[in-house]
Length: 484
Image (tube, rainbow, N blue to C red; front, side, top):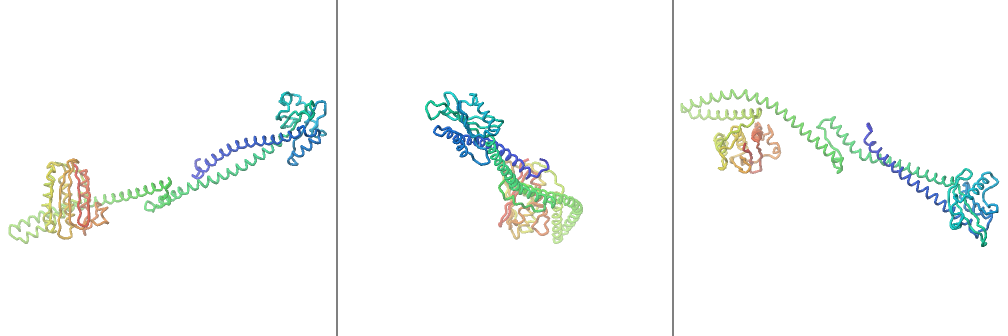
């Protein structure tokens, strides 16, 4: 069935199966009808012979002919023929003996009547008890033959044999008409089955065709083409297929979006690495020069110049941190774990950022967990960078004076440390919560949007995770670092 449409593949087996059922039913029905027709004819003709052979009926051809006329059906149909035979007497019959066929029929019947095996029960002890039936070929034609031997009305009178011959052709004609009707009904049923099969196939394949059309339109227009299909609301297998296809399209769109995003980030990373490399060396030289000037101002006792140089050094350190972020984002490296004191690292980082926190009028509070092992293994440089990013992010989130709280937690069961950085700011806006860790996403004017992305990257490099809880009263970031 290659090359055929789905509707045809559904319709053809359906029609074939229905045809087989119709043929089987037709054969069984025809067989039963044929038997019933023959039985009915035999019952009718048995009654005719019973009347003709009744001892109370007058004997003679006139009586037999009257009975034949009443028993004959259609005028054009050849009816039964009655024959009465008695020893030493000429037979009485409705046959036209003037014709060759009638004489031949009577001759063959008289000859067969002399053979007891041809008509069982015609003579002997069983004679006259019931009407017998058989099929015989007389004068070259098939007949249903009914027979019985009857005594006369006068006791001791000889038996008289009565025969009724009915043309088998009449029975076969009725059977053929019945067969023609069965065939007609079968043909109508087959036509109805084909029509029904086509309708069922159309009903089944219509949503599939629509799904194929939608898929073709999607293929020609790209993944950005909207995919809408009415079968998605159905609860059958086609609906499940449409929903699965829609989910696959959404997954492909997401994959394509991630691929484009990854390619854009890769290009951006290369550019960032190049820019950071060009900036880092001049910044180092600039910092050394400003440091020397600050030392000279301090020796001169010039407090105003010294303060100005310290501001410049702070800005240089901030630029250096931004450059380091660019390099970390562009060229990530595996975490180099080594035993260190996480509580001490937190305190040192807060001291390092003390000037910026003071300038922003933000109070920093450290709540270390004394149970945290001093030899907990992690990459100190990377975790320091992660903590700096989170603290600066929290500091910048505070609009006015506020507090940044840094906590450490140790889970002895899970063998994991948790860093918590909480602020008292207004919380992360709803529209960027789902993409807060994406690169270049920032709510701060002029922000680079790499702080949280790098924090997430460092946490994952330690086989850990980062999440946040935010609201109108502030935001808390949780960084989990499993023991290495």
